[in-house]
Length: 502
Image 1 (cartoon, rainbow, N blue to C red):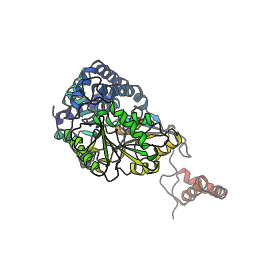
Image 2 (image 1 turned 180 degrees about the vertical axis):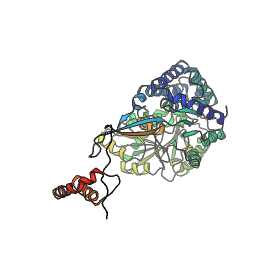
Image 3 (image 1 turned 90 degrees about the vertical axis):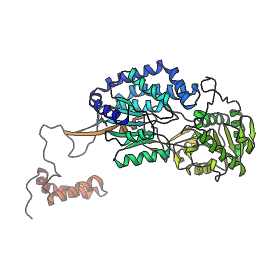
């Protein structure tokens, strides 16, 4: 189905879906959850075939993640979506009642990524659907097997026709979804450069968007870190998802005093990694789905080695010539800021991890923050107070202490700087997935005229000055006396009486 037809079907379905209670929408999500659980092996194999990621990793990172997010959304969002009172007490407002209501936006467009083609569209759709929106999912054209299964899953879960549409196609299909006037908001996950294009298209039609973009993750390893734990975690963060995760660690800043020991531990970790068939449950690293990026990375590694860097593979240290023959993973040590391989290009995510020794945690923070990206980082230290101080200085949306890449549904997911804008999945996502309406009324059957309505008068002016000075100012005694003096003159003002001639 083309994008235009998909959006129009969702537009027709929206009034009926929005009219359902949250509890009724929850039933459909539970059905989707059961269908995913029933087909998990088949789904994992499809994602592995599309991405080259190991099938065991796909189960962890895509299938289980999607199942848990659906469970969380169905369990927690109904409570969050309830109308809420807005408490406020102030003279003149005692009889007022105010409430906040969350209402669905309409049809949302979800543009999915190639590296996580199943979990992210499903999780984003689940959150949008429970809020009463309909969705049009445009999956990555690089994941056709996954795209076909997305459509069938929602059909098997018996969602009403048009509530969830899957529009397969290339960049032109994505653009058609973005610019269609029936789509109220876009949720895009992908590279920063493509995110800029999405933002421009949305801007032309004054359409909001949530952008979940790239990252060049940093790890700060301090003197007192548990080096064995840090090395094991960083190795996983750098090389899971065939190095293509936006949350993955790409740069390690380790203090010089423990630099060698950390590097030795890291090299020990990569020596035992197995690379092979993505369908082998025992494979740690699958096959890259982007040979062009791999070649560009190897060229940057060779350039860094010409400038003094050293390269390591599971087999040991490499020469510049050997780098061309290795498919990864690679650890690059003795790096310096001018080396492009340590730079700021999130398009070059792959099976390469750069390690840089620094003089202090302060220097690590400066160099990590020099990036134009700000998605995630990790801090490694046994001193929690110090680790929290370092985390507070890092300019990213998510920081893990003695942990890496931990994703929990209550976390507000998103970054700063070129890593995008907006937050999804946590309670903060309600402002992204709904329109917030405030309703205010008076408890009294017949509301009285308000002091600040017409007509204005000298008495209102003087009385307001006195009240503001008493309530907010420093000279409260004199203000109180002034208020008493003006009470008599202010009575007519409170009653909304006719203004005197000037």
